[in-house]
Image 1 (cartoon, rainbow, N blue to C red):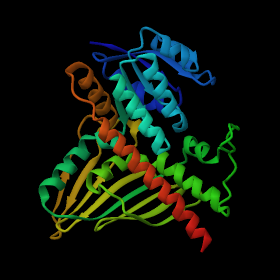
Image 2 (image 1 turned 135 degrees about the horizontal axis):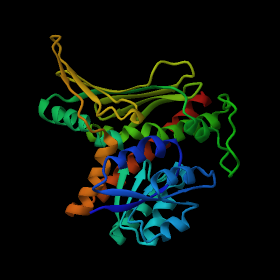
Image 3 (image 1 turned 90 degrees about the vertical axis):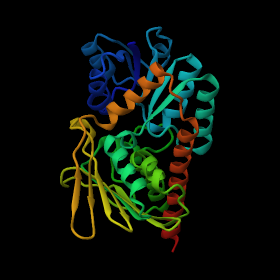
Image 4 (image 1 turned 90 degrees about the horizontal axis):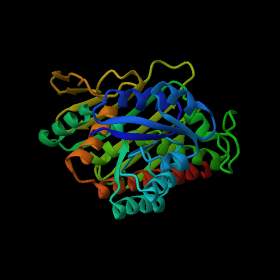
Length: 346
């Protein structure tokens, strides 16, 4: 059964990620409506797909052809857009991560979806990536406890994140000036926003192997835009590092997991290239290396297929897991915010 998709948001992520992905699933979904916040980009995208275009969300949510809403708006709007979709009676929502920026908003969103029976899938594409499934299978079957986890991101500039961290928080237009890193409150706020807007890609996968993060040992901003965070979760040490460099190398996005038996590296390609799944590699102490070839599908197509499976096959929605993933991220972001302030105070 083909279901009509209404896409809230018409930015680069929609153009480069979700629309090409949905085009690969013509037997499951068809984009019927795209809305923007007034930029006019929705009209251009909708014309290419013979879909409707509108400004704001009201017209899209009232469209009888819309069965599924894809929420690709700025993170600060995700929770309100989910609640509005539930109130409009849509069958399902796929929301880009995160579903909310606070714990209370996350709880409200999940409980609203649960009460209404609205299918909710969160676009955590790294968690859905087939390579992560193979990596988790290796960790579960390998027997060696996880001692260290390192998530390293080195990315070219991305206007979405530059806008995110330079917003004034009062509805003003974003400023493209460099943030004032000497201001502790600004630095702490930027780190918190980057954890929830950028680090969030890997946090559900991290929760798979480090269920509880007990202490943020340090958190520091990395100019021109990034963070370095050290966390202890039980006996596991976790480092999270991200930086966007104007003249940096091609994108690097790697999760390295050290166990008592080996090291597992999972390297994620940029999503917009649609080059298949991540690559997973296991390195043993004796020098042997086992490579897992990438699968044809990436995490974006896997998450949309998961949504189709819930709708078509009646699979259950893991509301509790969705909420725990959201709270895990918010707790880390809040603790990193506090650790940055503490570091500046010393």
